[in-house]
Amino acid sequence: MFVSMLASTVVSTSLPVIVHDLSGDQAAYTWVVTATLLTTAISTPVWGKLADLMNRKVLFQVSILIFVLATAAAGFSQNPGMLIAFRAVQGLGAGGLAALSQVIMADIISPRERGRYMGLFGAVMAVATVGGPLLGGVITDAWGWRWNFFVALPFAVAALFIVQRTLHLPARESTRARIDYLGIVLLSTAVSLLLIWVTNAGTSYDWWSLPTLLMVGGAVVAAVLFVVTELLVAEPLVPLTLFRNRTFSLAVVASIATGIAMFGASVFLAQYMQLARGATPTEAGLMTIPLIAGLLLASVGVGQLISRFGRWKPYLVVGGVLLVAGSYLLSTISYDTNFVVVSVYMFLLGAGVGMTMQNLVLVVQNTADPSQIGVSSSGVTFFRSLGGTIGVSVMGAALAAKVAELVTARAADIGAALHALGAQGAQLAQQLQSGTIPQVSTLPDGIRQIFEDVYAQGISHSFLIAVPFAIISVLAIVFLPNKPLTRMTNSERAAASEADLATVTVAEAMDVLAPATNDDADAAAAADSHASRGTVSR
Image (cartoon, rainbow, N blue to C red):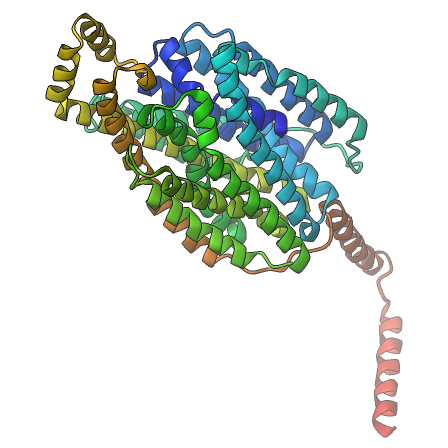
């Protein structure tokens, strides 16, 4: 997981520089992020389904290899299209890491004890999320952004070696794998069409137009066909029977808001620091530490408390409230907001994510059928990734639209500032008209302040989109059934279920193989009658 998080976060602070160097616009910036999130979301239930059917250790190692090789290949990108493609492949491996790590934990650690381990997972994620942007900023400033994609390779080799030597999972009966390929295609089609529409609507075409009708209509048709397919196939990608479980359904709703908050914050706060406050990539990494500190402290602390006392619901409710507060407060920031105030807002949002993200998976695993632990765990992770994917796309589209609107509104100020710069101003005007994201920290003072203000307003406006989803998340958490955490691992629960089934089967077999004769039945009835009379007389 450290490999996964490091490779993902190390580029976060350098993305504005990367997209600028590759001559990408805001849509390209958004798609560099959403391509990974999209394939992560789509592949997560596939990995989860495979985990219920195949060797989980081998799958885990394969996902590490896919992830790291794609990450390294991204370092050779020559244009935004290549980078987006390699990031999409990277997401396939990330989906495996996200799903399989949760399933493997359920195999060897009970839900009651898993709280503290979830806290450790959160700590690893926090360290990678803190160290990644810092390391990425230093690497970008010192050696260039391409080296960000190679830094995870030595950690990946170490991870593969450690997993091979130390991970020993309980033996499981092998099952013939049947993959729902049609379901994968339909789900990919529905989500992709929706994201492409959200990203380009309002710029490449109007919100109400023929492309909108075709894309949204196609997404709806694909989604309906996906549901029908899942009802008919023998091994569905996302078994719809899972939604009969109230805990799973509500956890899915809550996870969507958590994904939007987590991914949206990591993407747009890096942009805010560099485009609205003129920070370098290294400085941007340092400036997001309050967000990660909140995530780290909340994740580790709450994990320890859940394992110690066995109570989880109060912490999840508080985490949901913090998501609402953090998202709303970040929607009020401007380019000159006191950084201490911004730090408090980031800390609150990070604490909300830390309290809810891993623990929603824990709650679902506590009630899931042992034979469906893979699809149950990956189901929650899938909808969290899907929520993050759609959220980042919508927030990115809102940001692009707001920035375009503000640039048009301040065209006179921008023109005056460029005119004052003479020949340099004409060159800058040509660059700005191309749609490429500017490197704000290098702009001259007069024009820089205008664009800092524009991007600050655009980014704060995008955070407002996360608020209603966070409110829905709180409501879903409040209605989660408050079931105590079991002390049995998933393997022990599966063995216990098989033992119960065996007991019932033996009893039924005795009835079938040795049916009582009429004489035996009469004798048994007489004996029962005699025993009853004797009991009454005594």
